[in-house]
Image 1 (cartoon, helix red, strand yellow):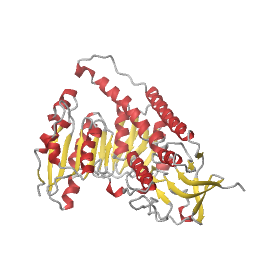
Image 2 (image 1 turned 135 degrees about the horizontal axis):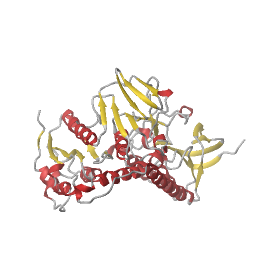
Image 3 (image 1 turned 30 degrees about the vertical axis):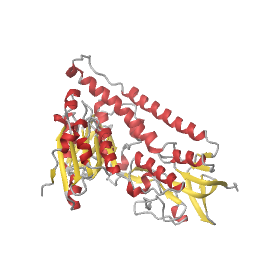
Length: 460
């Protein structure tokens, strides 16, 4: 029998929290084992942020080239080399993953085991795991195994070569007509990218509207600019069946049919916890396999933490990395809490969406004394100068505390600008500070004092 490898800490899964955590622990003199059954870097590096934002840039360049005449620049016919764009994306992924592997490999106290990890049991203040056939024993275990695409039980779907967010990025021939099932963030980002790269695109959302987490006028704004680019959006109809149609696919929506060459399923995420054998050590999971934690990201079993998407505290790269920061700070004797963070996120359509804190609907439901101000991007000088006038700004503040409780931006650089608000919220600063501050001209944020001057109580 193979002798058990002894470690101070085991990290299972190499998503965004893991590499930094492993290095930080190793540099504190601990023996660390990192177990990874797929590719180092997890979703973000391999089929999430890194590839999709790289591909987004190719799509945006194509979009701007088609608009060149608006800016007094005349080009010939714009042609997209789809395979070249995809290969550029893959090169960026390979470089990023290689950098992580080199960083981890440069630490003598880290051992990387390329195998699927699972618990065997635990006793005497230690946990026993298997990495493939290699036994490992450690005092502490950090789970960072991420999520994968949820594939709904649609009749006929298992009989067609459907795509998920991983297999989509392996294409080297441009889809003639990409049908996207799911009108949320991944589906809309990829739908717009492939439209700009030359594919016909239809987005199917079974709910009443796309981006249902956002306020209705925000969803309407996003739908409008996507449709202006030629994306067909179908909402409010159930998907009843998927079938082959010649060399393509047909998606049935009751009596309505949508035919295409490819179908992408983007209907949510499932946690990668089924191979961990968590029951061997008594770690609790919810009905979908997510692992609940306390504010310190500790599971119900002392000595085991859940970081990243599987703890259901934010399905984003930045929340996973923030989990690492909380875990290492508390390891060093700190008292950081995941409950204290201000949740902010972006959807990287073009223009992007930036959100922090409450939506208007959530603010209304809160029962708090809320003030709101809204402003259209078409009235922002910088947006007009850039020819990027689509979008809106919505700010929400608590009239009793003078603090921001939320903001939504759709428009030029919204993914960056939203962090101005999130930082104010994290600092507990009054909106009056922002209103009286000196902004830089010409920028989008210079209008924040003007917008805040329009704060009014939420109408009943």
